Image: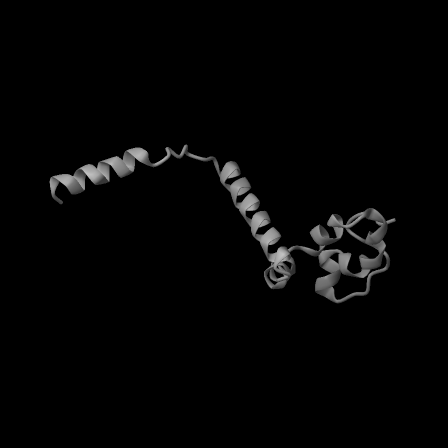
Length: 100
């Protein structure tokens, strides 16, 4: 590397904004914010494919909890205890959260 290349490299490093070291919580929040912005763009373009994929990986309990409480009962069958799902038993009205 010649002298002018070294100076250009040094100037580039000096002009780069200093990034503070983020905690895991801050980095996670930055990721969430970036995903939200991406979802907004997808919705503006009426492209729901990636959103659908993301929601398919979201636990049922979280999806139901996102809805207004009065809608929870509609999805009661999906909100069974994990033990009941593993054994294949029908739900007898027992859910992992109170449903009105």
